[in-house]
Amino acid sequence: MKIVAVCGMGIGTSVLLKMNTEQALQSLGVDAEVEAADIGVARGAARTAQIVLTSAELADEIGDVPATVIVVDSFFDVDEISQKLRDALE
Image (cartoon, rainbow, N blue to C red; front, side, top):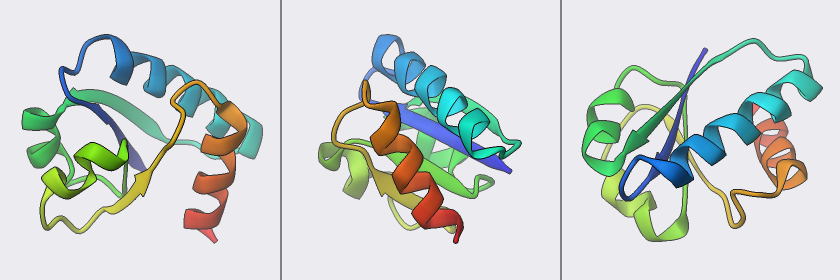
């Protein structure tokens, strides 16, 4: 499974989201490749991903992609990320 963690600039915040997503996936026992990306790269990466994690502000900018787009309120909250991934995978 491929997951894309998206922020506006693709540097700090998306890397934080990537790391917390990897931690959440580990706690869920799910094997996935997580990629950090800015919004420009994310549009292309989301075409081959199963899940995109991003903020509410950027969710609409991802565009029409086959991936499930999940809005994360706090990129720091591993519990929130875990719950939203669990819900999406069920």
